[in-house]
Image (tube, rainbow, N blue to C red; front, side, top):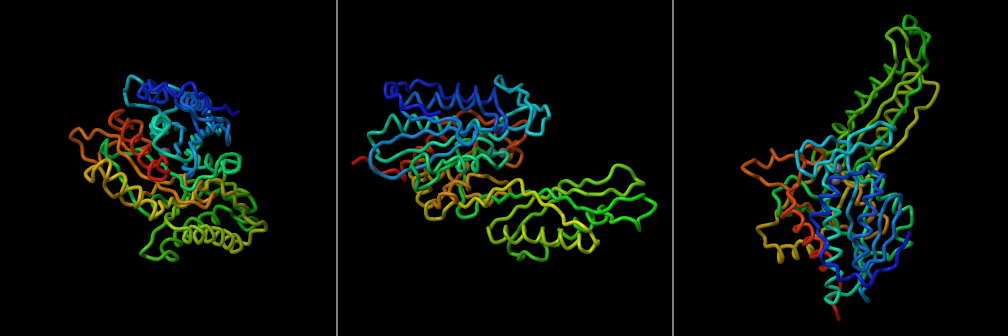
Length: 411
Ligand code: ZN
Ligand code: ZN
């Protein structure tokens, strides 16, 4: 549903952003179930002059502010929460429960800080609308669902994000993390790993456990696959580079004296370049197929590649320009470089789909309070609780400064 801009309301500068954040935090919703969240966010940006569309790629929200000639700049925030039982003890802690995508009833918590991302984007959207006389161009706000399932960005693209709305020249986004509040961590080039998951079914032939000669044993096949897969990183990836292949799920059989028909594996892959990503994915299929042949399997293995997020590359030139603007605004003392992160983000899907650069950075949310950085609760922890300030204002400022770096000055 699209609502035309509400031009009368550009004045309501009195939205309490802290209250919006606390509300998002207290009432989190799982991936692809962000209905109340989407409504809340759509209302918050519609009230300050954005053409607002809901239900883009499921529960995504898009806001457009056309403000004269100039570049189209996309600002992205993810909005989903996680199946985690909150233990922060905060007055606005979540006690929500929901049914997840597998049908299980689970607790729900904003344990990755996506509530902070959404609130920061609302704050930036409102300030940019209020100061529209100072710049020229078009703002494209994207509130993306289902980042935690690595499918929300793809769903929005497939639902016509870049056909139905102005096509941006750059994607800007941020993630809150276990860094001191008020600080900005940045990197250039590969920033976060790609993530791919494949569910594999190995087909054997079952028989009585006492008669292995009548079987094609999928358990032995699976055991060889698990061992052999660990040769990919150690033997096929250069020592100067890195990748991860993890078999996180291995299931076969129900009883010790029955050889089952099938065995199943769930494999997760992380890499830092698209070359290595393609190589490792192909190597997994090659090894699984070869082990099936080696066992004399009569049926080909099955592969279901169900999670896919590309390497997140923060475009080096665009990052340099954005970080220069951050340094001028925040001062060099509030910025520091960080190493690549083994976690993944699907924000890179937007830039890859539109063929445009992405700039992504991290901002701190934690009060050190005498603790060491490595002791701060990290994302996905039940204790992950950003300090509302200065985290919120830092995140708003960063989005505004970054957007203004790429929008044209008012003519
Ligand atoms: Zn997360
Ligand atoms: Zn996250």
